[in-house]
Amino acid sequence: MKAFLDADFLLNSESAKILYHDYAAKMPIIDYHCHVSPMEIARNRRFSNITQAWLGGDHYKWRLIRASGESEKLVTGSDSSDYEKFLAFARALPKAIGNPVYHWTHLELQRYFNCDLTLSPDTADEIWALCNKRLSCDDMDVRGIIAKSKVNIIATTDDPLDSLEWHEAISADESVQTKVLPTFRPDKAVNIDNPEFKDYIQRLGEVFGAAVKTLDDLFAALESRLDLFGHMGCVIADHGLDYVPFVHNSEARAPGIFEKTVSGAILSDDETAAYKTAMLIYFGRQYAKRGWTMQLHYGAIRNVNTVMFKRLGPDTGFDAISSNECSQNIASLLDHLEQGSCLPKTILYSLNPNDDAMLMSVAGCFPGDGVMSRVQHGSAWWFNDSKQGMEAQLTSLANKGLLSGFIGMLTDSRSFFSYVRHEYFRRVLCSLIGDWIENGEHPNNIKELGEIVQDISYSNAVKYFGFNDEGK
Image (cartoon, rainbow, N blue to C red; front, top):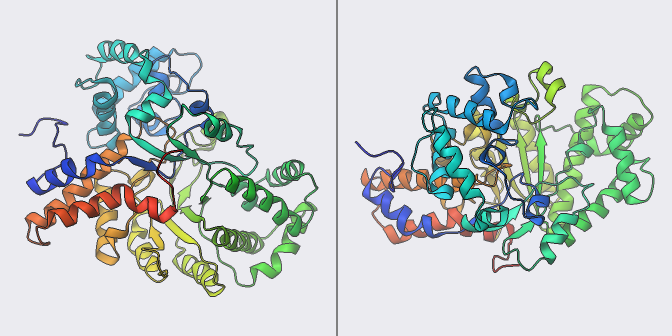
């Protein structure tokens, strides 16, 4: 029987152990999609206790605590202490057998706190004291945690209205060794069916310095923000979509649809989809012109629990997987951009793992001269970044595409301790390839396969996004 979380955790063959320890483990990290706060990096936040570091905004852990039957006040309540919330997590975690959060939590304890204990009610007080003492050390501020994780580049997620002042502060601070770049996330300018859409457009006009009354006005305002993001080093855009729309002739219809909304009229579902399609086409052209990469995340049903949404707001752990079928729309959108010679490098993510094969087959239809895997099937995301989910995504990618061209893992997280997910992914990757070697499904060329592992872990992302990884 193997020991829990030993040096060869998840590495089930000698080949896997060599691939991980001699190749993957040595590589630094590029976190090209995450939700950490650039303000906290600029200010170099220090956490007062482990609850702030672990549970603040982490809806993965919140869902586990709720599922174990704990009161909401011990998850998000203002009338419970950080210590009480930590104890609730300590009671919930031992029940989470098979959940990746169990693995991530204990990897974090080992990597950042030198703690080999497993969290439970019996060990909670000891771990609470040990972690809080460790957090008081000089190297455990936010920048210290990032440095300890060997993170070279972080791409945050930022609204077009963001001033990017914190990115500017980080860029000017020579003590920050990690490159922190913004990502352009224009969802609020796309979601014309959102009740707050008109207010957002008004605020965009105020930032731009001219009222936005027509679609051309909107494009001018957005291009000014795209220019600012580009000036700050942005090379990636991200779109969070319920589904991927595509309506023919949408660009011709979009100006009238926009003006109709601004005037206060109600749109039909078809008009809404047409406007969103036109905006995705517009943004795709902009990204292609600038050499940026477009990410399309779709497949989530947002804010399923209305009672809790009204109480806590979005991104609090009440989203689910959608079964919307939009394969033809995805193919049509990419094809439309390709016909106009303006299809940017694109990464496709579905929250529904049943879409894996479809996305991989669509991605393979749009190769790019001089670009390996121009359209990517993105890494296992959110509900899928478990061992099984990663294996399924990697296997689908290998079966139907080019695994060696994959740009690897991301955290998609708000936690600065989530970089262990890159280690987790690399172990799963090496174990999978190691099994193919051991089963005689691939030649035992460790050097060649080790280079592929290093490319997937790091180097492919550098090339794909066009990053300069030589420091700030």
